[in-house]
Amino acid sequence: MSPKGRQAKSQARINAFDKLVNEQSERSQRGLELYIPPGPRLGNTVIEVDAVSKGYANRLLVENMSFALPPGGIVGIIGPNGAGKSTLFRMLAGQEQPNSGSITIGETVKLGYVDQGRTLDADKTIWEEITGGAEILQLGTQQFNSRGYVSRFNFSGSDQQKKVGVLSGGERNRVHLAKVLREEANVLLLDEPTNDLDVNAIRALEDGLENFPGCVVVISHDRWFLDRIATHILAFEGDSQVVWHTGNYTEYEEDRKRRLGREADQPHRIKYRDLTRQ
Image (cartoon, rainbow, N blue to C red; front, side):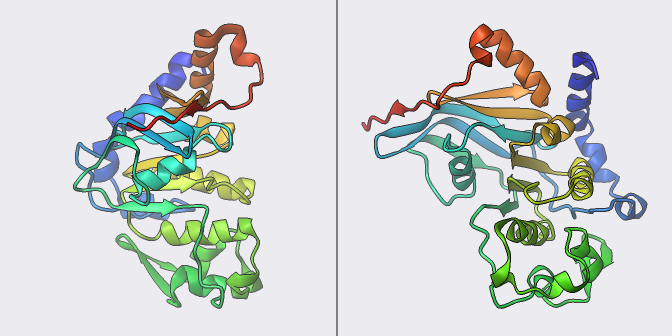
């Protein structure tokens, strides 16, 4: 797809947000392999981050970060490990506070947060943890067979009876993802949601997110995943700086190379500024 075509595709979802909300018909819902039920309708204010700085000890992770999430946006968060991506999620979820600046959560926002902590009941089976023991799940206006829903996350047959306590990290990721996507949130914070998903499950997740009538913020190292779904990129580029870009991953990379020239292709160890307290 040409750069102009990619930009048009990215902007189309934002422009069509009201249509997405209004056209959650039974036919379109049932046509999705992975249906993500919508939460309350979002207002114009989703989450606004204004001049936020955050650090620990003498290490400044981000400085003077500002952006506003659009109601129909799918925002990809990228950057090296340790740059502050998961810290940003914890701040958006109210689990941590910035050192300076402000974060405003819209009155209509209902958050669904898939974090890397993944607190789950070790004594329950996969099926019990995801479904609460219900044979039929009510997702939005639709009813689904609960075992069929669980199977969409690569848990089929006897796997659904495995105890959560013996699962690998990737399997726990899938369980937590399946639970959160049932919650009817209108803003999803997804931390590495494609980990341990096969190609079919990733494509089902992509389709589900593209048809989700809300806002999605997703941390991912999967550039192909972000190329297909992202309308915006928030890039942690090091030296405590964060860049907001309208467009998908490929468009961001093109912009980064224009800005940095030869430096863009050189590997760099992540740098932090010193945190000064006033």
